[in-house]
Length: 144
Image 1 (cartoon, rainbow, N blue to C red):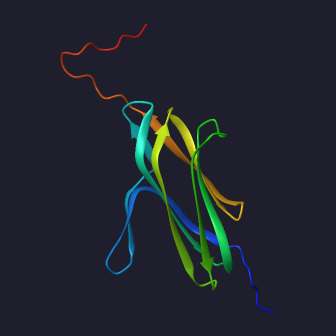
Image 2 (image 1 turned 45 degrees about the vertical axis):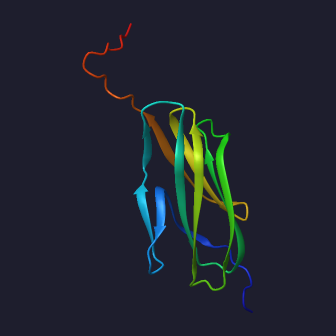
Image 3 (image 1 turned 90 degrees about the horizontal axis):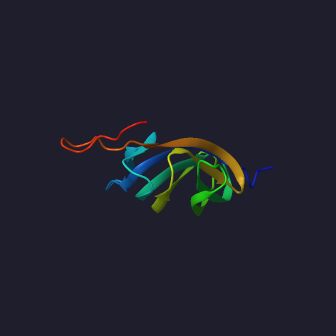
């Protein structure tokens, strides 16, 4: 008996600034992020890309990616797509683009990757608030 449906494995998931395609069809990722450092809050991130690669499955699937706020409840951004794998040796690559993401606070955000409502991966993405250094001649902040 040949299986008609096998839930795929998530081979990788990466957050980056941009994903581009070469003339030969290969993808390249620009600015793979481990964290996001910002000079002020709140801030709007013009573009965040989530690169996901699926393999070892058979069938049609629904992928969902969510960016969760540090409170671990608020969905800051969400994207979905459908893909198909006809053979377990095939792979499917999905790139979710989150545009104009409003980041309200510093802290640990989470990327959640689901396929057919099954959580495959949840990983942290820290947002670090680092104010720019004071310019010469500017008053330094005081601490009490």
